[in-house]
Length: 187
Image (tube, rainbow, N blue to C red; front, side, top):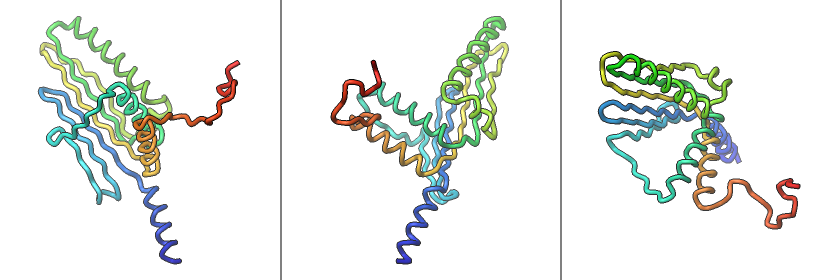
């Protein structure tokens, strides 16, 4: 009996110890990326980087991209972002065109951030640094991105179940087998 209680307490504790998911992407001369998942205060660590690539073959590319975006949004809303760093270096020879490009890149960056984050979530990020840097008299485009998300195991399991359900063809909204005329409250 005591072993069962100890096992249950251990499982509950493990469910609420957070995972740290760190994603780094660099686009310079050669694109590089690195994803690190850390659990149990660094005792368990898995890294995937551009040197040892993980290749996933999927014929339904648009559906898998939408599922990935939904899972990222789910982690952002359920987890806590510890650090978000984005730096874009843009350089052109013509300063007038460079000024226009900086404005366009800022608009695109803010649109993407607004798509993934609500305004109150941006305020809760401990370390937030977003920069678009103009570089005059040089032809350069560089991007550096780092994001660290802290999320509990419970939410990872839920996201994995949602992913498996949509991958196997299940509907994300469960419905009764007998559908009435006004099931979706359409009149």
